[in-house]
Amino acid sequence: MGRLTERLYNGVVKENPTFVMMLGMCPTLAVTSSAINGLGMGLSTTVVLILSNMLISALRKIIPDKVRIPAFIVIVASFVTIVQLLLQAYIPFLYSALGVYIPLIVVNCIILGRAESYASKNDVLSSAFDGIGMGLGFTLGLTLIGIFRELLGSGAIFGFQFIPDGVHISIFVMAPGAFFVLAGLTALQNRLKMPSATNQEEESEQEQAEKEADEA
Image (cartoon, one colour):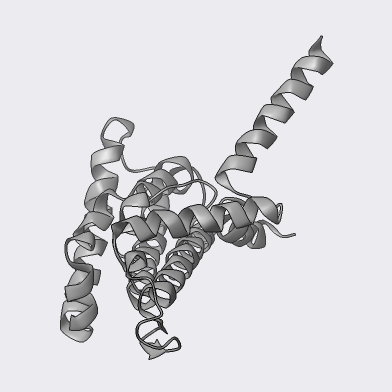
């Protein structure tokens, strides 16, 4: 697997921000009442993540170490403002649906985490692919949760009705529904032996135990 392809794979599967690293839980739980909301928030975050990663990587040798975090926040905030204005101008219904969670992208721990741990230490191209991978992984997570919540809670997916009225369970489009769906999808990952927050921790503990045994 090539270096750039590995960045994509890590972001979507191995280090998925939503299901493996459990990052960005605020928008994950708050805006995924429908599939379109999850997709819109995911793509908005992806655009900011890619552009901020690239610019931070390009300026990594110029930004003083002592002010790097404030500098990262200013860069991210600039791109978030651009995305917010574009959504307000061209997709007003999505802008209204996402509301305050659009400006909160500025402090999304996924974006600041990738800026600090990867973009500030690697070249522009690798940082761009890292942003694409993490962004797609985040978008996938939000969209999946949104699909299940919308289907179970209102009987629709992307606004298209699949289940007749009176059959759906309205709690899934409410706040508790986000926790139920996230827990269910994480349990499914464990069942299928896919990377998830819980089995990643178990693997780390197993590796640590094996390392200690070898040293002994």
